[in-house]
Length: 172
Image 1 (spheres, rainbow, N blue to C red):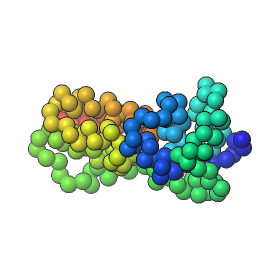
Image 2: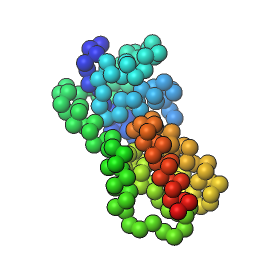
Image 3: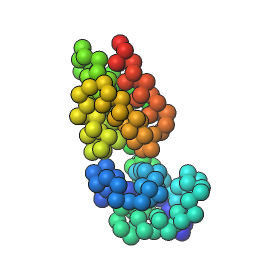
Image 4: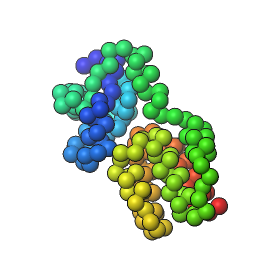
């Protein structure tokens, strides 16, 4: 396979990750998260150096219609750009939201939901569970799941930023 080949998730791939749960093998899910909205096969190889079956799995994902090749590398960069806003952009977007409710739990929950919506959308199981949080114990149970989703889709730095922002709102 050509290492310069650009890969991107399809709508079917997005739906598989965020709506259908865990029907893919763990390594395939890891590949799907790493691909995001655009990455070259070479970049994917450097992200997952220990995956000896990478090309076979990529081929399987291509055949099943969960990912696609992008023929124009500029299109891949344009597709990838809106998917990963920077931390300041996310913080500015969250800050532009309506004033936070007086209830600290609701303020933290709202912040996490806004942060996740900006980075990963609203269709992930973590988003759904955070939407249903009613008490501090369930918030503390769901928050690590939200952090893992953001770390996998965006970056560990943005996941830590989300967690710190939620903590700040819950103690303010």
